[in-house]
Length: 34
Image 1 (cartoon, rainbow, N blue to C red):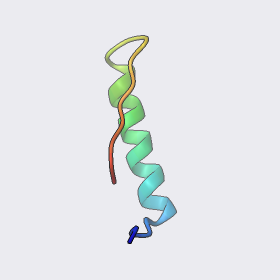
Image 2 (cartoon, rainbow, N blue to C red):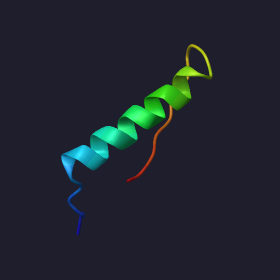
Image 3 (cartoon, helix red, strand yellow):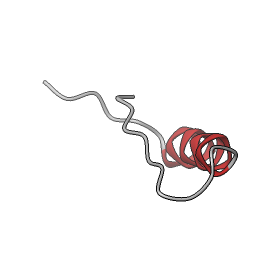
Image 4 (cartoon, rainbow, N blue to C red):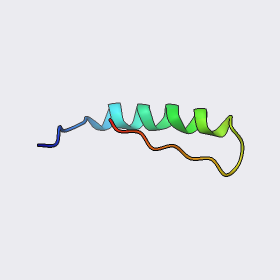
């Protein structure tokens, strides 16, 4: 069964990962499981 993740937690995590990936430069991406 899939756990429901609150929007706020999901948004905060995505924002954090976005800035981490941006520091690596262009053509980078990351996939994380929450």
